[in-house]
Amino acid sequence: MNLEDHLGDIIRKARMMSNTSPAVAARAAGLTEADLSGLEESGVYANRPNFNTLARAIGLHPGNLQTIANGWLPSKKDLNRWRELRVFTTAGNGITVNCYLAWDGVTRDAALFDTGFDVSPVLETIAANHLELSHVFITHSHSDHIAGLGTIRASLPAAKVHSSSKNAPLEQRNITGECVQLGQLRITHRATPGHAEDGVTYIVSNWPDHAPQVAIVGDTIFAGSMGGGNNAWELARSKVREEILTLPAETLICAGHGPLTTVAEEKANNPFFG
Ligand SMILES: [Fe+2]
Image 1 (cartoon, helix red, strand yellow):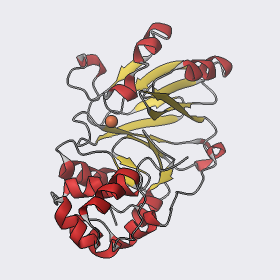
Image 2 (cartoon, rainbow, N blue to C red; image 1 turned 90 degrees about the horizontal axis):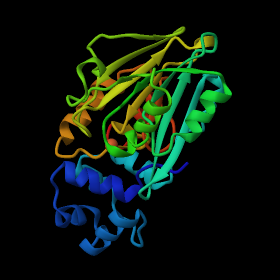
Image 3 (cartoon, rainbow, N blue to C red; image 1 turned 90 degrees about the vertical axis):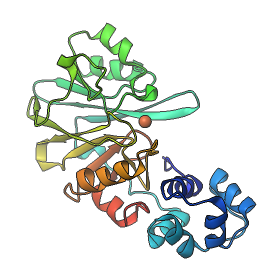
Image 4 (cartoon, rainbow, N blue to C red; image 1 turned 180 degrees about the horizontal axis):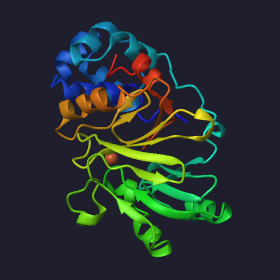
């Protein structure tokens, strides 16, 4: 799977975050404004920018921006390590989005994290593995992440919905310090607003065979990038630093878009957080 954000997306986001004009960024990169605009649009360049000075001008880690420009991808993850964890990538409106299903191998209790556009592969997996969907956890209420919620609720009405949206009914809202038990698995959450006001990261721990814990982060952070700040860039960035990059290094990061990654890989390679 490709990274969610190409080199140009990263530069544009960082430029917006740092309030740097195209003229100033282009000068720092040693490019014309037209070249910079083309790079931001396509992620490719004809004239090589000076990544070092560009990164400094727009608040990115110079070495990590260079790493992205060199085609970095996180290492391929072997999901067999977690056994009862599945990723579903569905498409709609010209974009793809990930949702995740986790379950306890003994009790068959399952939890879905976001729904994506099309829940039919999720429903098939639930049926094929004889699972009971007990919980649906929403990372944030942007439409691509919850498009299938109506279908899930109609098909599996016993599943309890959890979200941090202030528009959600009280009984669905995440409570600070709450821990949901899914058989042997434990699910906690931490508030990660910024990209979305109701952004929340769910941590699934206590996997069989001591597999590392899993952080389902929505669009808080992507492999090599982060979700758009939607006018709360600094909040978004600080929440990643405080709530996600402080997790153990081997934590598997399951993002709403793009490939699986780890806390260690993002600390070492993400240009927003070097
Ligand atoms: Fe989003």
